Length: 390
Image (cartoon, rainbow, N blue to C red; front, side, top):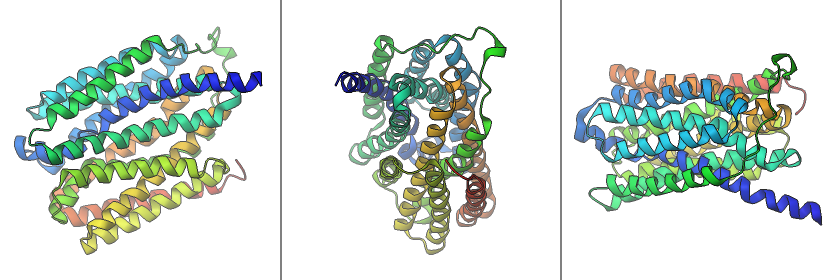
């Protein structure tokens, strides 16, 4: 009875820490339905659009390089609070974006903030769960990320559909969410990792566990990055679907699928979860190629849903391996490494595809992207398949 009471007491702090992750990720994807609008009002190409998106990836990668190790050394909270404050600054920039330069800076700062919550924030959720709830805490951490990633574009797409000037209300709501997240980060009691007294006393980082997660997570998140960066252009230019609500709704459904699938497979072995993630990403690319060739908007949505499942399962599998096999004083660093492995292709491939589209057209460029990612998904499945058990 006492144990059950103690376990219930841990849920509240875990959910509170998860809210910080959700709020920052909502900001990260809120611009998705607005890109076509900014592209029309400011005037820039598909290549520039993918560069704006990739600037976010650049900020995220730069943040991941330092935030994970820093959070393991000085604690999660001293890293989280500045990270959320940076997200608030980025939100204010989006409120006043009138040039490509402002959009680039806003996206860069958003990436930095996301890098902080991916490493320190998600590690904090697992830490607050305690050693006996690593799988449940890993699920909550993973769901908080994809839930925020889906709520952001849904909010933005809905307001852009029904108001003529959606920028202010969208980012005002985001600002309120972030201010609440900052308050939570300030008052939340997060246990500090065990102090590192000597480099020799550190447990070795089990990189093979991180590699298995990256093998599936990287193709999955690259697929969702394509939907976020070029999906609205694909719907608008190739399929003549111009509704921001559909663009935002597609991104939302994608991440809701990534959320729901994690609950559905929570009791499976990690190896099975990862294999299903690879299969889903492969199917997503097959459907995307069919959608492009047949100019069918519904198939674009289906491809997005399958890509979301691929990312969600790869993320859950990778975080579960980290939560169960990596010590607390290296957990944020391991989170950073897994996300670096995922976000490098997630930034590079959509940018390359944007410029390929400028050269050979939207249909051919999207098809080329789908072929490359399908091969990556197969290779990821082969890597995981080689593992005898997990």
